[in-house]
Amino acid sequence: VLYTLYLTKLIKASGKLRFSYANNIYLYRVAYTLEKSNLLIIKNVRNVI
Image 1: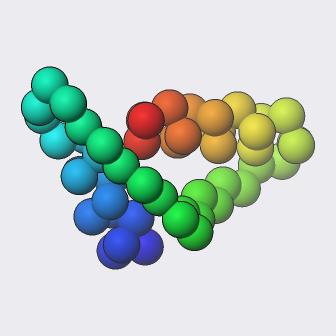
Image 2 (image 1 turned 120 degrees about the horizontal axis):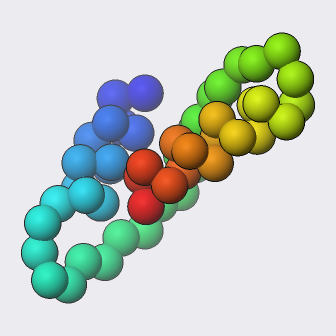
């Protein structure tokens, strides 16, 4: 979890050009339906990108 938080800060860092590589980022969301779970993951991924 700490690595994910660290990597998120690097990806969101300001600058005109930014290059990043991510491997084994783990996003875990729980919901009562698969559709809701997918929406939560999509939201998390967009926040990282």
